[in-house]
Length: 408
Picture 1 (cartoon, rainbow, N blue to C red):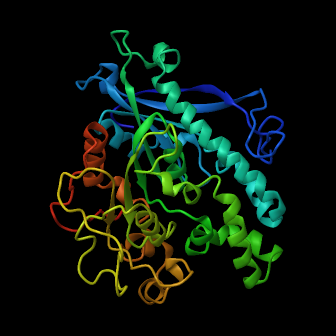
Picture 2 (spheres, rainbow, N blue to C red; picture 1 turned 135 degrees about the vertical axis):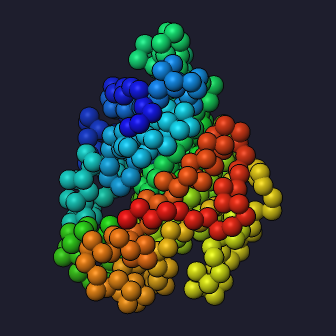
Picture 3 (cartoon, rainbow, N blue to C red; picture 1 turned 90 degrees about the vertical axis):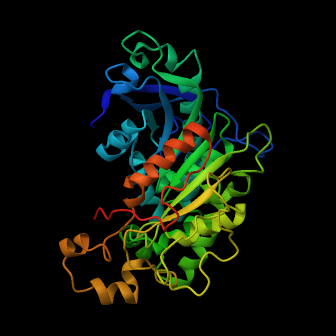
């Protein structure tokens, strides 16, 4: 990507808490009382990819970069960090993005995930591996700042032979699945205190049927569990397992009420209005749980058809703001429908977009999925840079509703 000067890939090791070699399908090992996970004494080798900017390498003006751990999207991989849009935005703020696969919900887990959807007795192993995946994010962050690790490698040095990034602090940025599971990782993180969670949510049991992504995976689960009533019960039961690996199980300790020996954290929730993949109602629940205020006006008048949008939430009083915040970004998508369905099943979307071809849908802001629009918004990029550098939250929208360009 433009502005990037070097790609560094390699492996690091972390303690293994799963049986065997920790591959998909491996279950957690526990102490004799079965009250806590137990390290097996083995190490797990995890891959990483870091993108270094021209500025931090000394090829352009800018100086040392800020190190950011990145959480990738649904069943993706660490290679998402090398994408063009993310790279250009990171370079503009002189941020060095590094990523590792989110074990349990990564590209390497797809085959087992499909198998588990057809036989849900296998699902507990997925939740177990997600916890190992959270640990991988934490160890990557520690490797970035520990002087015995990445800082001593020449690949991370500039043209003068010095460490090319600040090692006193690291940050987190995640999108989609990286926002959903990034909340869990942030809650237990000891090495980062600030996180931006893009198009996040919590409780997969609520998210699944409200997401267009579920359409594909439902084709596996529905024949195995054909009763609608049974499936609703199943989602609720699965959530009790899923809580171990996503924000729903950790949210109460995400910001101002941290776990013991863990710092308080600041987070910014960046939400796409009308998101087809991650239902915004779930991130609103996160904000209510934590008493996180929202940017006002959140949306243009009459954009949200609900009688009382953002009920029980307070607006941000003044800028620059401290603490945490929720921002809606509007790129013109049809408002999400009520009920447990995804936006393309809603009456308004079908009246507006139902007769259009796929290309026409992608070209129409009202019909296209706005899921990736916030992360590309210039205002969000500048807000994130200021947040990481100063810990304060700026208003990138000039007192107006935040708008993002539709990207189709």
